[in-house]
Length: 119
Length: 112
Image (cartoon, rainbow over all chains, first blue to last red; front, top):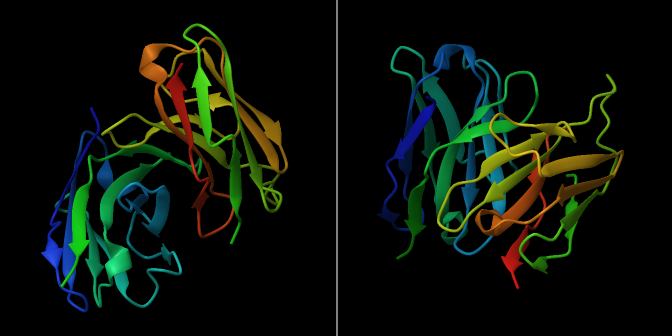
């Protein structure tokens, strides 16, 4: 069965960096587009970034452009989100999600990892 | 960015009764190929989101048939034919026609 397990969430000070990881199993990771989304405490969902199956093509939300980088290691079945210059408004649970192949949706989500940006 | 607006934001429902959630996009979600990338997701309390419906009306694997989606262009609806206790949660519409993908604010479904 599809499993996505995020890790790396932490409490960090504003302006610092953090890298999140998402370990994938139960499907052909190297064939699938992957995403990051987030949810601030008590708030709705926000799409953050998308990466093609081969890591060549990437798209970002405006809130992430220039500060966040999405990458993947298909040999390790792992997705990453490198976040820099973190702000208080980046505080959220970060989810990795698998793309519903060719259907432009998000079919499986991990349990999420909490990032808190606070001094 | 495409803005997704859901109504109502809260929906108290009696068990066994139907529920309906509307979602309106600020521009048409129809692509140049004629596809419409509108999905519905459910988030139960304390859980990650779960895909219910994709491309307006296609139920994802394992989703009960009491959930149905309809609509076109800019107006879409999610219907639950008979609400069960396990349907309590927040429902989001999401568009993937144009980057950035965007979600509605969410509609809270609760039992009266």
